[in-house]
Image (cartoon, rainbow, N blue to C red):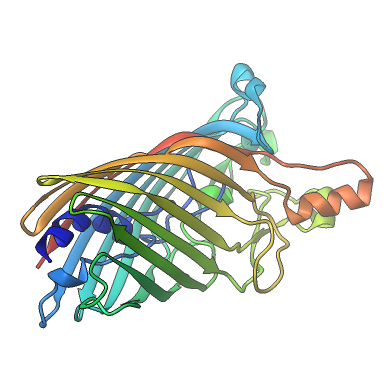
Amino acid sequence: MKFTYKFFIGIAAYLLFNITDVNAQGCVAIRSTGGLCAMDEHPDSVSSNGAWLFNSNSRYYRSYKHFVGRTEQKQRIALGTNVINHSYAQDLTLTRIFNNRWSFSLDIPVLANSRSSLYEHGGKERHYTHSYGIGDVSIRAYAWLLNPAKARKGNIQAGLGLKLPTGSYTYQDYFQHTGVNGAKVLGPVDQSIQLGDGGTGIITELNGYYNLSHKFGFYGSFYYMISPREQNGVSSARGGTPSAKAVANGSDIMSVPDQFMIRAGANYGAGDFNFSLGVREECLPAKDLIGGSNGFRRPGYIISAEPGITYRVKSFSIYSFVPVALVRNRTQSVPDKISTQLTGVTSHGDAAFADYAVNIGVTFKF
């Protein structure tokens, strides 16, 4: 069914290769460790010999607004004490489509991050730390659950894979605050700009679509990464000595958290263009499904409106998607709750979020 393929390919390319995250527009949530929510070319478009897809997806965001729960800490910007993260991710993904049901993908993220703050450098002047390199590589296998020959209007795809600990989770840069006479001290950068988390993740995915006509339809996807490892052994003290509070509540060592993302929306095809509008939630939960959940993490979620546009010519497509934040919530972590129990005073850390993220990508079929 050629009309189904032409209509579906725009959103499919983005579902196949986009993430992010990685971090989900800030200190919270999904790190850019690989393209998320893989959906392949429509089954009807694949020949008996299969096909190859190559995608290059670029993602950028600037996080600078601090939240405790859903309350923005506006005084941080007014006082100039807010943390500012710039995050760039270039995901390179190669997918082998074996037939109209099975496929396999390899994703290699290249990350470049910068972080500026006062509190990490003595509290008086703003200084920067950086990280650059390969992130956590992922490999995944996918299968359409319904027979494409019969499921003409819609289908569901299941994915299973591994996120490998290839990115450095001990990346170091210089901090100003702990040295004698203001000397710089080398230490691990903040968790939000580390290239990896040090854990092997189990990736599970469900993706689906349903077309009401040859121009209009719906899409949805669910991604959950299980991280059995609780902590990675890296100090959160940035080259200094952990505080007594951090040692007591367990936040002196970085955590290896789970991650999940949900996306749903509608898309409309007009010639070689595809327009879409959906809702996207990215989350780093306070508690993991498997294993312990202690250690330093900034749990929370962000819900965004996600408009997008895709242009396709023959075997080439280019797209742009810009999720815009609607709700940002930094939830209580396990160390927060431990501190609350120990002191009798509610403890609730903050996190910085972005207003939006920019995704631009190209896909080639060969």
